[in-house]
Amino acid sequence: MSHLNDPQQHSLVSGKPLPAGFRHLPGRLDATAQEGLLAEVLASVGAAGWFQPTMPRSGRPLSVRMCNLGSLGWVSDKEGYRYQPHHPDTGCPWPPLPASLLELWQAVAGYPHPPEACLVNLYRTGARMGLHQDRDEADLSAPVVSVSLGDDALFRIGGTNRRDPGRTIVLRSGDVVVLGGASRLCFHGIDRILPGTSALVPGGGRINLTLRRVSVPPAASPFSPQPGTRPGG
DNA sequence: GAGTCGCC
DNA sequence: TTAG
Image (cartoon, rainbow, N blue to C red; front, side, top):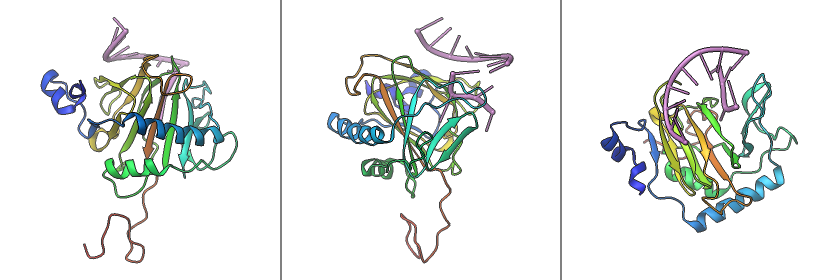
């Protein structure tokens, strides 16, 4: 039942609320939208190629494979975490961010500038993502918007301190989640992929899309009005 | 198995 | 400042 994942509803039942600013949208993308979005993303990623991120310092590979769409992409290697405009293996610019994702951002982010990065994470069965914060973006006032495609995932979200207690939520194909406001810097991760719970992703598993604004937008100018603003307003 | 902790 |  979808209401079980609703922050207000659940806090009333368990007394263990989700962080303020965290939204698990009640309506998920329908099957047609999921298929169309995945086809677009896989076409772009197919041309660019997946890369295998590794841990800073140790060089140990993460269990997920990654690609990015947009003007900037998140990468991790022995040198550390960063955003960069090109694919780490080929040096090519990331493929463009699909219009459908720009529209989704505009509809749910509540932020007046477009996203610059869409991190595409591929979780095959057994892949996980340890508890972490998204804090490599210069503009932390913008939310992170996540779209789940494929197999169900157990998503854990805690507080802004690593040892804060957390909650586990099932993310299903088509689910949209927004980490904004006070939840923007909450620790979160993927504990487990539930194999065989969706047939959407070829070869099985889950693909997660995270839309992010990376850089602080340029200051508003009367000669170059920003989207969502109005002169004299 | 879920959750927490400590450490390389 | 470990997304291990």
